[in-house]
Image 1 (cartoon, rainbow, N blue to C red):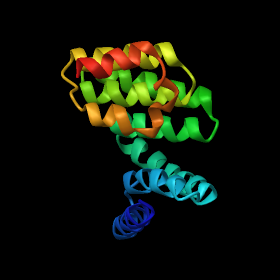
Image 2: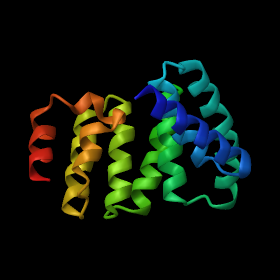
Image 3: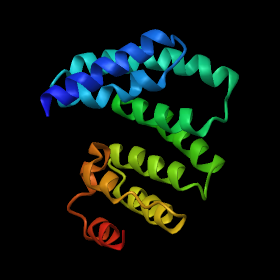
Image 4: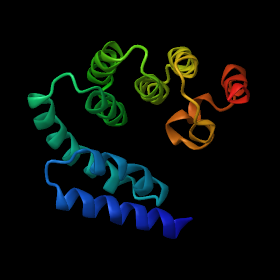
Length: 157
């Protein structure tokens, strides 16, 4: 497991180096870095990614992926109010898009907003989300793991 996490972190770092405007690779690298116990590296990565993301949103202010990924990063940095502003904007841009709803749920879960997270996941499933393995393994959803509604949702998939 550790070798795969290290490989993933290295690959995301390479991708971010090749494309200096890309915020996504840097944000996605935080999961493997945290999995390796490199929490400070993950936090530093988020700060650098947010600089890129802010530039991206200047050009594309309604990009739902940028907004929900950024909201998750902001939540991890403890910037709850800004994260919630971004996640609401992302949700408004795709209220029936299963991927938007799934990722909005992740942000809510990171923010200890269990009811909102479950509601978004239920709506995501209604709108076609079908990746049970994501629900089982996504560390953003750790808060929901023991909740009966979450367990029932997994069974439905």
